[in-house]
Image 1 (cartoon, helix red, strand yellow):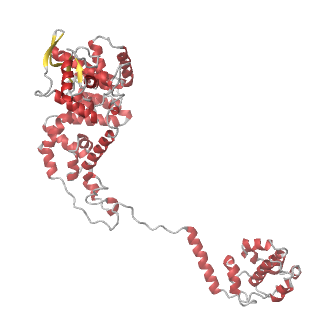
Image 2 (tube, rainbow, N blue to C red; image 1 turned 45 degrees about the vertical axis):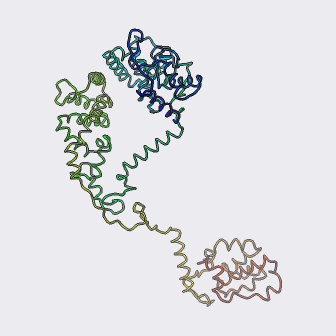
Image 3 (cartoon, rainbow, N blue to C red; image 1 turned 120 degrees about the horizontal axis):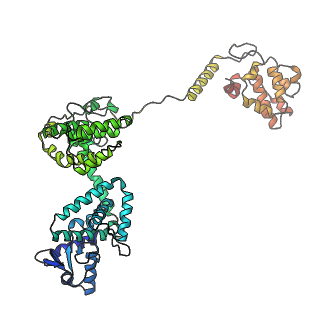
Length: 538
């Protein structure tokens, strides 16, 4: 982009009436072309202005022509600078490459269609290929392309012959730069992006984003907040009431947004209502009514499309219609032809025409009219209400979650265990406690699985356990050396603790030693036994 700016600065100096190149009316064939310059004059000016060699000056002159800043009048296809009497003209600044105007396919299709009409089908081979390709690519709007080509061709015939010739050369040179023929050097290489700063496009996008953000900053509920308050936080519905679709008096922020662009106005139901009031005073209210009818047709019920299309035609488009709208004959022909087989988008051409008419003609006057100014003056400015205390006003409420059912169940079991430990007294071996299982067989269900797994790893303890704790059989007690220590009159829980001690002792290999038998004692405090087993039993 930087070198293009330097080229543009030199081109501006060339056109300076005092220090630039003298432009004169020159004769081309039988036509006098105004503001023409000779190639030799351009070459000599570059030599004197920049003080460079002939080769450098010629190369710089070629770049002026190849990038489209200067276009030839006598040989339009030859984009080079000839240092003789060949005539050239300066390109309009609108078409300079640095303007970043994209060479749109639609514009190129219109140019080829116009050239096809002018030459009665005689096009270059590459132009024919492009013409057929564009016909398939944008076939959905090819009628519009042909219409525009005919209108431009008709307007060109009304110009003077010299102007018409110069414009033809100008247009041809523009498309030779932006749609390079095969075999010709493309200085832009598929677009302006090649010759510009690669960061320039991103910078432009950021600028547009910043501009948009600044414009809509006051309407952003996150950055600027809601007035009078955020209903999701304060449970106050005033915000929704004040911003209803057809509220009697809208908020000032809402009315100011209508002035941002025409789409903001026409998307707001209250804005359309106020705009309709203005259009009625200008006797053009049927334009907005037609646009709304087309929207209803486009997004309404599919079964009523044909019926609605006929009603719209009779009300707005038919000859002598009660609310007839003013559209050009070509658009009317396209619309009438499409109404023979109506569908949702059959009126798109007419709707777009009316939309652009309202945008370019009526919208500007509406913003300056008393209708808009009165609505802006009486608009409501809500006062901010007190919000609930919160670190971040738009954050979620901090809700307490209920505890997990598993945790609740564990807490209940622990409470029951503590209650049983506090109320049950197992020091009395012969006493019967209703809170404990009384039948010997009931204890088997109370013993947890880890106890059985421990006992199963010790030889002979499971028969001893069931003999002492479940069946209470003297014969089963005799199977184990410690069976004599397990008396029948001992409380079942004490006997269970004894068996656990037996298991641990036998693992260590001392179960049959006399010292183990001599030093063994019953678990004196039952609470200690409960500490080992009672947590699982309880």
